[in-house]
Length: 160
Image (cartoon, one colour):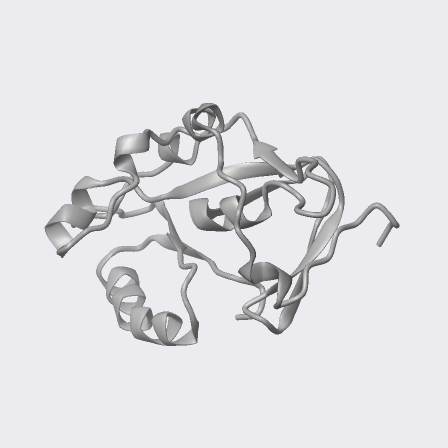
C-alpha cells in the first residue's frame, strides 16, 4: 500500500468519532429522522436500511472486526452501513476526508422482499452481520430458490 494509506489499531477505533455532516447524509439518500431504532419487525420494515454507497478519497487500510485487515482504494465505491461510514469518513490523525458520498444512493436500488413473485429475477441478499447470521439465513434462501426459478446473489463481508 502507498505511504499515504491510513491504518487504525484497535485502541484507536475507540476514539470519539467526528460527526457526519447533515449534507453528506442527505447526499447518501438518508434523512436525519430515518436514523432510528426499530422495536419490532413492522417498524423495521417501514424504515429504509442505514446502508449507503461511499467513495474512497485516498487509499487506506483498517482492521475489521479486530482481526481482518481491509483496504479501501482511492476512487473505488463501497457499500457499507452508515455506522462504518461514520467510523472511517475522516482521519483522526490529519482530519482529512477518507470517504465521501458516492453520488449514487443505495435507497434508489433498495426493494425489500415482501413475498412478491421473483420468478426469473435476480435477488441480492446483503448481509453485514456475523457468521451466525449467514448460517441462519440459508433456509430462507433455499426456500426462495425452490419456490421460484430466480438468481440469488449474496453479498457479505470478505472474512465470510
